[in-house]
Image 1 (cartoon, rainbow, N blue to C red):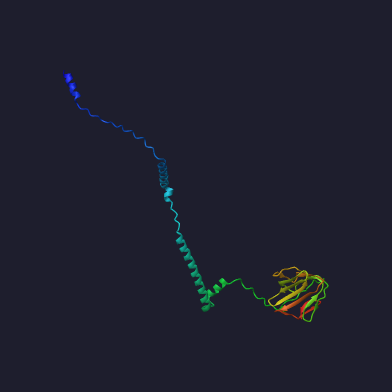
Image 2: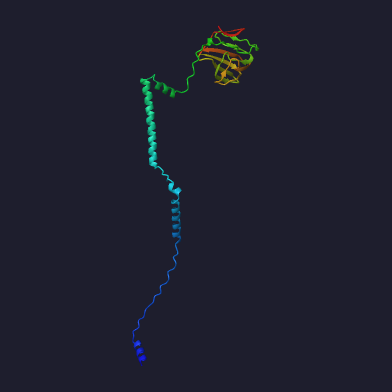
Length: 242
């Protein structure tokens, strides 16, 4: 009887329902590929920065373009000022101290090639050499004006050592050459069929200057300061000043 009573009381107990929500288990975290790449780069940078060689290195700084242009302008200005100062020194030393050591030094510094020493010898200071070889039979005539001439197939020699100043003409019309012996004395030879030297060459009285084939007349004229010399004689001993 008691059991039935207890059972009846149990049936009268209100019953509450409970809703149970199941919480799904969180999936294991999977890192993103981009994040992995960023992490790897950061790790490499950290490793390089921790390297002693990197820590001791000094970054190279490039000068700004504006600063570089300013430096170039300063250099050009300094060069211009130095040039002006040098010109001023030269100008004032030339005026006030023409014989000073500074002026002498500056003249030597800016001087060009050294001037060639003047050759003041006159024609009478030269001993004339034969115009042709002794083995050649050539009759040399002297005109009233002092012009020497001959016709022979022979090599022609200069009357004295000198420098070949000019070569004019051609093989058809004949060559005319001028030999300078000093600043005032020179010789002109015309009627040559061949010339062995070029203008500017040194010539010797013992070496042939040119050649004549004997078909034309060879003429030799001596000049002193541009004037024809009428004072040469021909004898068995050769040429001489009269």
